[in-house]
Every structure is written in structure tokens, then in C-alpha cells.
Image (cartoon, rainbow, N blue to C red; front, side, top):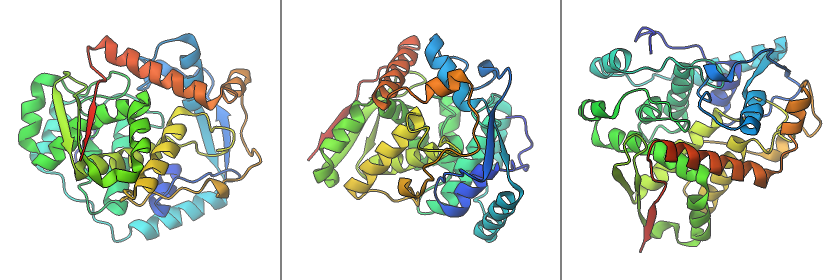
Length: 329
């Protein structure tokens, strides 16, 4: 994180639209999407992804150039300015910002822009649409590890981080990477879905911290809060347009499933809208090469299995256990 502490990144138009509306949107008809020639996956958070097919699919999913039409640009900008005109983001303690700048390394490209862009999007979205919970968690959610084994700080600095945060923020920050992996692995979602009728009886989620495999736990309400944070995070991975074509994107699959679980359980606290019926059915404004077209034809179940396999491999590489336990009354 090399940018000055008082410089806030300018969100992309897709991010501005999500913040303005409190929802991911299918922008088909408003954008032109083209593959980026010679896109280098090794310059992104997915650089550690293994396997020829998974890398080819991920390259086509994130290696895109999006051009917005002038009227759409104007409409999104105006909506964003209206939505955020009175928003005051909570200040970040100077000591924490100093730690992030001097002791951590966020200098890796994200799927869309820099990692800092992604972190600030999650922070701003949470401040506006999940105001009853601390948005600081979403600024820090990947500091103890991403889903692809990149780490902004070593485990030895965890005590320093803990000293800079209140207990709530630290608990959710350390749990975020673990919950994310468990969601992609799949079994946690299955168990939550099977027990939706007794959501209020959920008492604890025991798991292992990604960065060092230490045992950690979320209890009671904090489990559902954590899952709301996860849903906000997934907003930033939604396809910019043509959802019908990209239904097998692994993040899109997880977003749909987690959204349905939270709704069914009556635990959706954050404002995160989603209505697939409003997404245009015809494909508009998107050019795919042959590999990109083939990537859209992978069945949803196959995409899920590939994602789960990838998560397990990443955890095995660093000695992280995906074992967990839910306890119920």
C-alpha cells in the first residue's frame, strides 16, 4: 500500500453503480467489453492459481477492457454523487494507517485495478449500506490472506495488528479469509442451507485461521455478520454485464448461493440487492475469443467443483486446515 494515507482511490464506474444502488447490476447495453491482448494473470491476485484450464478460464474472466457509453457514464456518475453526497467515511486511526502503509504490502493487482481499489470499494460500500456494522473490517478483510495465498503481512505481526483494532474488528478481520475459503469449499454452505429452519439456533463456527492455521471461532450473531461481510465482498466480483452468459463464474455462483441462504435464514442485514430477472437476456456489447467462449460453457456444477478443488489445494500448500464445526442449540 504505497499511496498516501489521505488519497482515496476513485472507484470504477461498475463500483460506483454498485455503491449508488446498493446492488450489483447487469450493465448490458451500457458497456462494450473486449479481451485485453496479452493479459498477464501473473500480475494479479490470481498469479498463484494452478492448472492450465483454471488459469485459462480465470484469464478470460478478469482480462477484459470495459468501455462505457457516454450516457451511461453520466447516469452512473450522477447516481453515485447523489448517493454519497452526505456520506462521511469513518476516519482511520493514524496509527493503523501507518501500519498499513509501512508494515504491509498490498501492491498486487486485483481483478479490476489495484488491491487498494478493491479494499476501498468494500469499505465505502459497507459504510453506506451496512452502517450498523464496522466498515473497517472490509478495508482490512484480506490483510491476513487472500483466497490465492497472497499475504499482506507475516503472521508474526498479528499481535501488532490486534493492538490497533477493537475486539470486534480484529475478530472479523482474522476470520474473513477462513470463512471465504469455507464458502468456496462448499460444505459450510450445504450445512447452513440444510439448517435454515433453525438459523437462530446457530451458536458457533470453529475453524482455522488461514495465515497460521491457529484455531479461531465466531459465535452467535457474529457468524451471520461475517456472512453479510462476505456478500458485500462478492459484489465486487460480479460480471459487469451479460449475467446470463456468465452464470458459471465461480464468484457469481457463490454470490447467488450466499444471497439465497441469508434471505432464507432471515439474516440478510446489509443492503445488497439482487434480481436476476431484471438482467437483460440477449448478449450485448461483448466480444469473446474462442477460449473465452468455451469458458462460458463450463457447467455450473463443474465450476463449483473446480473452485472447491482449487481452494483445497491452496490450503494444503500452506498447511491450512479447512476443517470446521458448527454448533447448534
